[in-house]
Length: 193
Image (tube, rainbow, N blue to C red; front, side):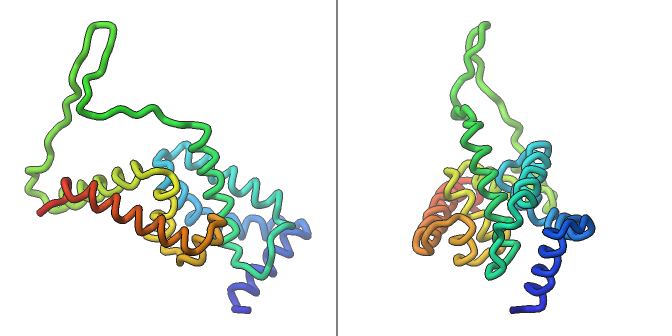
């Protein structure tokens, strides 16, 4: 067992014994990474705050069920991802193509978007590319989006993703491969040199 794992185990045991400082320590250590993974999935700050809070409430309520043989962070990520999946299931957003006219009581109108592609500033272009990539990721079907975020944004190994999502390793690899293919296809148009 690594020193980090031993340290985590000690803190968890102290928390289970009612030590409030241990709970605070867990929260301080993992709040940032959990916020980051949830925000990348839901892309809404207030909702992210709610889901982070919900994640820690659930984790602390079921801390006794944590198996010390595994990494605490993986267990916590699993709770966070499951919260996101529940959130997506509850809130299926209505979507429509951006080039389709919008109907209103006053008739139909076409949406217009500013063209920022001719900006000479490298910084702006870089930010724009990042936004395009993030939007493309956000448009992926849920199972692919979650897998690609865990792999590339959170630097989780295939094995950790398999454990977090409770799916076979082969399924993880297939989802990430498929997600990359879908992203390449979407981004080819937007990011072509």
